[in-house]
Amino acid sequence: MLAATLLAAYLLLRSRLGLDLTAIRDDEVGARSVGVQPARAKRIVYLIAAAGAGGAGALIIISQLNVQAASVFSVQWSAYMIFVAVIGGVGTIEGPILGTILFFTLQQSLAERGAWYLIIVGTVAVLVAMYAPRGLWGAISDRFDLRLFPTGYWLHPQGSSPGGLLARLLRRER
Image 1: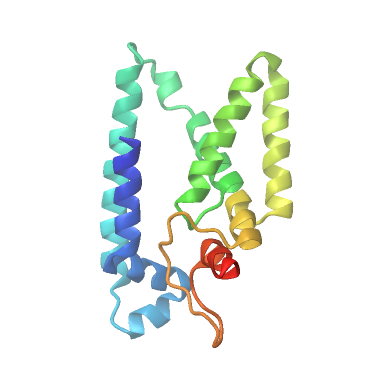
Image 2 (image 1 turned 180 degrees about the horizontal axis):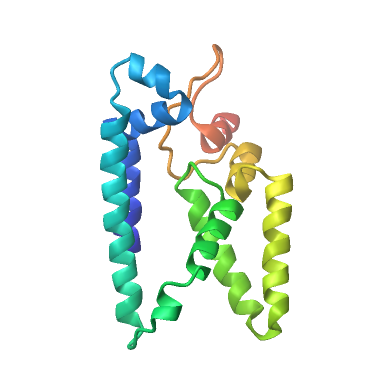
């Protein structure tokens, strides 16, 4: 299920719709001026996201043999998603993956600490927001020029070549 979701997100971001969404994110008026229909693109992505969220919610409910409305509709789920986005970073596929891994690692390792768990998680979120505004994956990808799922389109200055870290390492060996 995870692999299918990642593949769908990757293909969506590499498609014409993904390019339209990137243009809308960067400059909606400019995107509209070159023929992008922001309302249509946003509507399509909203429907795709709603279907994905509904499917994920259904899997969570099925995995818990009983349903308690207080836990299912808790604000805690929203807090988890915000933490994952802040820690991992938004705008990439890798950021939320890294944020999710870090979140569940912290949750499992600090589960017996009680209220300290929330204090530590909150402190981590504040520190990452202060010192790595694009999230941990943003800091990692900037530092090492690393992109596992290259979904965007980058312009390279004259004289430089595309490819990132792996291409640079291969060129050095020659």
